[in-house]
Image (cartoon, rainbow, N blue to C red):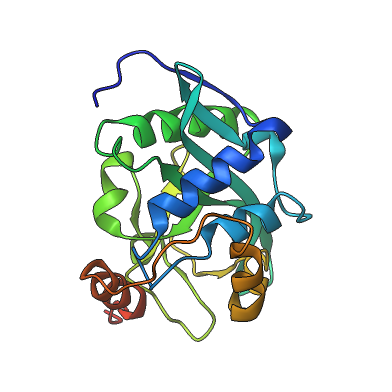
Length: 219
């Protein structure tokens, strides 16, 4: 269904269940059999790094069709200088309404707000095909890496203004909001609060595995 009219607004507590159900349906079996994104959203709202000021939903005819959330993380250079950056995610568009520019609208809206709030960099881990059109580039282009000088292909960086990076190396330290999602039993227990869905394999899971385990060679 094509969507022409919508509003973008901050998420409220009354939206929580609908947002989690939407995310669960959209991510189910996409990256792994089942998913944990709905549990992650539940946890993120309670985490100290979460930024409710940048927690937005896209709504049409009273129905939420997309959401995006942000939290704070750090990057540190080789001299120990630390800067706060934004970690974007989850970004979610309701199944059946994807590839219509709704995710783009959410990102562009919140990028503007983030810059007004004083942030200059957004980082996320995802499929480059979904983000390069929004101005994200490989972490290697900005010399941003994980400890051990690891440059993952899926680690993407979006400066919100010019001149943010000057060539020096920065180590990205993501906050630990998603750590509890590694507890499969906890994910399963939370998932019991939702309508049962069948876990299954699909090709997108192999695509995710390749992207998430690939690294960029040093030049």
